[in-house]
Length: 240
Image 1 (tube, rainbow, N blue to C red):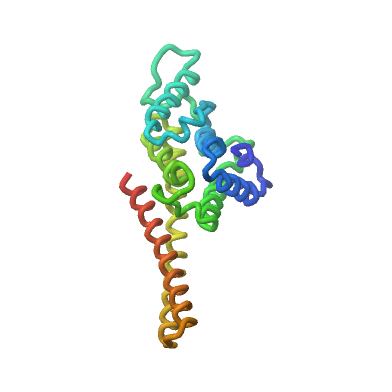
Image 2: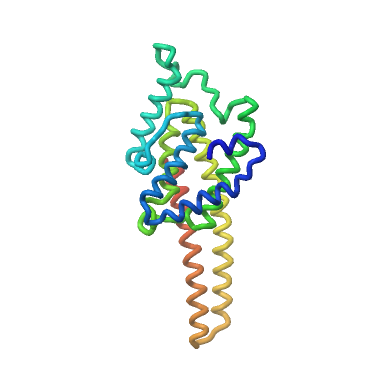
């Protein structure tokens, strides 16, 4: 996926939609789920300008993320210092013109495409309801947003600037998109509540009326649940 961000003419929407659809199809399929999540985590690592790898199991293991990030950092320093014997000054990778700040022609489209990719990812996850999965109810091993933010939040504390800056940037972009979704959900909740109130004002006691009221109440409850879930995700992000 990372190569797509280097093209000025790439259609990112189909790419993101295909990935989310593929991820959704991995429900109750641990093998395919690990492969899909691994692809996304590698995308984040590559966005930092790093060639380091993690295994599929490491990508999925939220408890092991700090150790995995430590390994990535060590490998990045080792590669950067392969021709030197001293330590990196200030804990930063030497000459780190990583994609997010690079001025080279080939990386010129990167930042704008990264912004669009993140926006599309969160929007597509919201449309597909993948965004609102919870640990207790998900048909996947863990909610995808929880895995992604665990990686980003851990990487944002890295002493290596390419990792710290890029992961913080991505995390902030995600939170911004979550705020947009929260605003849309609040509007939808107000609409569903008004529709429910209008049905109630019509009055009635028969089965048809009771059915309409139950349907209206179910819609309000569903949207309210999404609103609460978004607030939980954003709170966790801010607290971290």
